[in-house]
Image 1: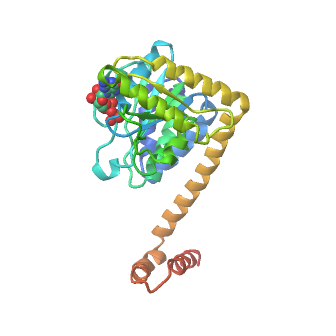
Image 2: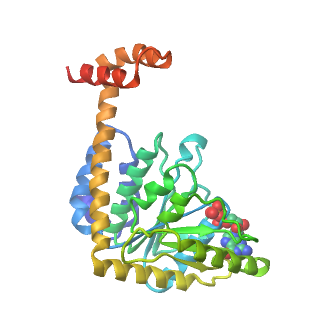
Image 3: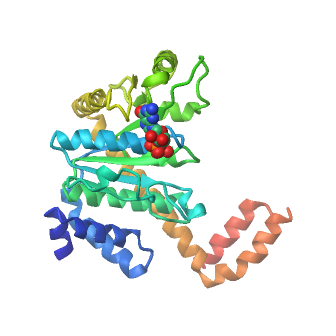
Length: 320
Ligand code: GDP
C-alpha cells in the first residue's frame, strides 16, 4: 500500500492524509483506514505516549510548545494530538486556534493536529488513538495528547497513553484546587506551571501542598511513585526536569514490564469498547428497531416501562 510506505518514510502530507482518513465516518474510508492501520501495526508502539491535562488557562499549549521545542533540540520528533469532547458542542477545538503552538507547528520535527470533531467522546477518542498509531508509524518518538479538564476526557486520555501529566496553577494558601481525587489519581507527574515572577512563591507553596497530598494517594503503577515539579513554560525553567522524569518513568516501567502490560490492557479494553459501540450503532440503524424506538422511549419517559425491559425488547427485536 503506497500510503503506508509514504507514512513509514516520514512523509507528513501522507500522515495528514491518513489522519483525515481515520477521522472520516464514511464507510469506505473506515475500511481503508482499518486496512492501513493493520498494515502499519508492526511499525507502531515505539514512542513514549504522554497525556497532558489541566484547566483552561493553566498553560497547556504554552507548556507543550516549550517542552516540544526542548525535545526537538535534543533530537526527538514530537507529535501533538488532542482530545476535546467540547469541540462537538462548540464547533471549535482546543488546538483549532492557529496561533497556538506556532513555533512547534512549524518545526520540521513536529506535527500538531487539532482534536477531531465528533458527536461522542468515544468517537473522538477512537480517532485520536488511531492517529497516535499513525504518528508512531511515521517515526515520531514522543507523542503528546492534550485534553481539557472536562467530563471523562482525562480518563479517556489516560487510557491511551503511558504517562499522565497534570498541570496546575500556583495557588496561594493551602487549598487544593478543586481537582477531583479521581483525576489526581491518574497523574504520574504533577506540574505546577507559571512558577515565575510574582507567582514563584505561590508555586512553591502549591508544590509542597501537592507533595503532601500525594502521600495519601495510591499510585497507578507498582514501580512508579508520582511526583510534583514546578516549571515555567514562558521562562523555560524546569522543562528539562520534566523530561528527566519521563525518562525515569519509562525506564522503571520498562524494567518492571508494566509499560507493556498497561498497553496490552489498553488495547484489549479498546477492542471491547469498539465492539460495544459498533453493535449499538448497528442496532440503532436496524429498521425494525428504529420503528420500535419512539414507542419504547416514550414508555420509559412516562415511567410505564422499566428501562431494562425496554432494552431487552430492543435487543430481542434486533436479534430476531
Ligand atoms: P491552556 O488553555 O491551558 O492551553 O493555556 P495557554 O497555554 O493558552 O496559557 C494561558 C495563559 O497563560 C497565556 O496567556 C500564557 O501566556 C500564560 N502562561 C502559560 N504558561 C505560563 C508560565 O509558565 N508563566 C506565566 N507567567 N504565564 C504563562
